[in-house]
Length: 231
Image (cartoon, rainbow, N blue to C red; front, side, top):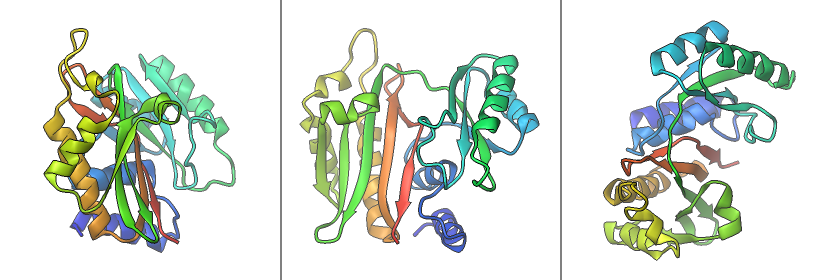
């Protein structure tokens, strides 16, 4: 296990967490080579303002805690904040929505990633078959379209390429409507990274990276990540 990932898992274990925070989950993925969004973890409005200034508007704002796995439904995500006034309003509104019983809540300020194509990658560990890696169409259509591929870990480069070519909607990975083709090499390396995580870190039971947004340049970027630990 890599050193940064080892520290993240150890800290989560010591705190009794069932899931990693979104920030820690993406830090672990980045340690293995998965491209993730540029973001800052802050504690207050002053920190949020400074982070947004450094990243450049527009930004996204999210509450961050291991006790907050479903933030969108709770109104704890604000997207496409265009300036400091919008950031201030979103921060104050969001702070009032955080449940009082949730301790130590931080806030993520993220650079907005623009892209018309959304993918999903993940891992699930089965008690009988072991870890499986998943790839498919992501975003709000993940469940509706059910266009996904699974392979048992460990993956080979051939397995990763075969998964990418195996979805029914694979044509959206090509150059379409002025968009560059998806960087399949980087996408394949991201799937191999999940395979390595699955084989090296048995403490992780599941990973859900959704969405993996593909920019106009074809580069996929993880803007959200849920990493579930075993019990």
